[in-house]
Image: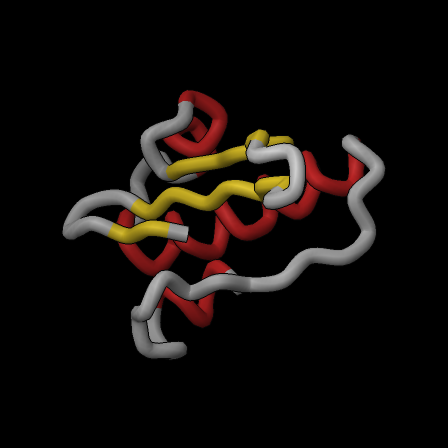
Length: 81
């Protein structure tokens, strides 16, 4: 996961193959539609977390390891997880 001042990004990566399996971000079209009229940072993290989970399940992924990218586990990082 990566967070910037205005957006948050998440990917499910296969480290052995070095490929991204699924991804989602607050800059994504589907996420932007579901965030209309809401505060974008915390709400976006929740929505991105739900979308990445849906996409991972659709791809047949059952288990992941959460790498918070060095960020403290609170706020938007916690909401995404």
